[in-house]
Length: 286
Image 1 (cartoon, rainbow, N blue to C red):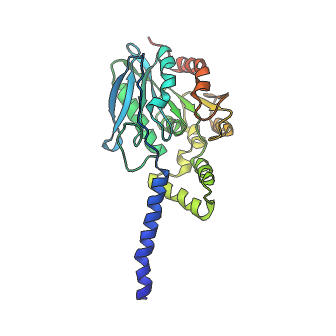
Image 2: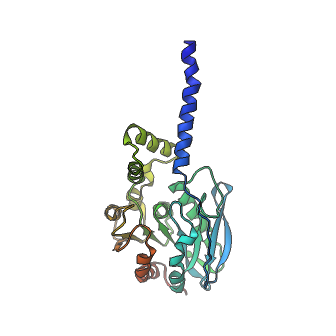
Image 3: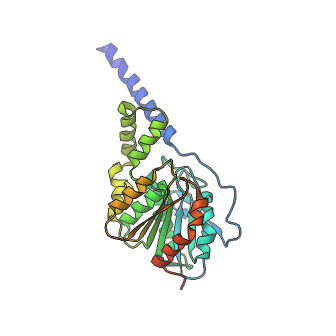
């Protein structure tokens, strides 16, 4: 019996080490911005976020009482990666807040990053925008990419007053996305992958089913434009179709375009359609 008891702390240590390895393996790479929104009337801001954290962002006003957008990057990204959209959106009459999520870019670190925490950061950005004199707080929207897009849909599902969402390359379900990633690392689903999926849900405090875009879209009441690259190898375009099919009503539009998961060149060539959607739903500057 005594010999068996000695194995308990060893197993606990091994278990704890495995969980730490999972956290480290899934943690996003922090990439710091190297440029700024040159040619635009930007200013640097630190936006108060959840857990007492500070979110780095660029605020780009567009006159008085303008409609405004929180622009959120994807996993391992930063505000700089969304800059190709900034000038045309600003020219279209929109004030912009390009944010770094926690654990990304120049924002404060936290214990972990997750889709729900991206959503909290987007909500902090919306609240901050609503308090700016250059912004019409009744005309706010979100543009999000990948995890940022999934987070934008989660925000819209629980924020009825939101004006519009543009989702760029959202995945349909976090479990599907993670299983693809595990497969790419040659990690078998059973038992290792299944344990990782369960562990992640315990850490973030949400079941994947409750935050999956293919589920949250049914609770979204504002207009949504789902934009997805037809050559996306990271998140297949069929997942955009799955999200669209799960929507309730006719306020969700699907726009399939040429390009891959991160190809903003192709998104840029469709920017007129994005701006037309946003002007129709949020309106032009008064």
